[in-house]
Length: 92
Image 1 (cartoon, rainbow, N blue to C red):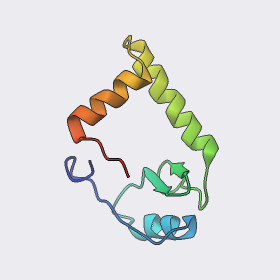
Image 2 (cartoon, rainbow, N blue to C red):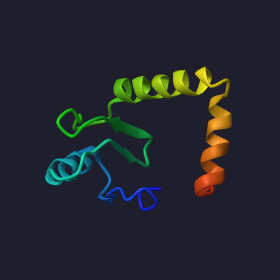
Image 3 (tube, rainbow, N blue to C red):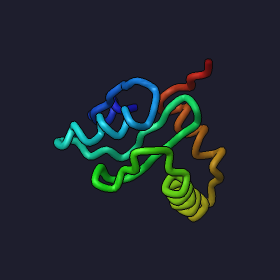
Image 4 (cartoon, rainbow, N blue to C red):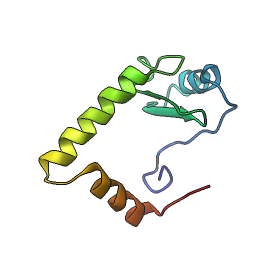
């Protein structure tokens, strides 16, 4: 997805200290989303990136997405299917 939209992607070691460090090191990029395999997410501008899992900001972003999707008469599941159609589906 990042490549398709010409957005910088960085892979790090596991742990939010690494994710936040990389986000802060790449000042030329606007870090908008970071995640790890342990179901941890953080969202927002790099100046606002929390150096740890931030379920509150992730929840707020998800609510904004839901509001946008539902206002178009669709469901989150419909939106997810659109993403799969556009980018493919990955399961492990």
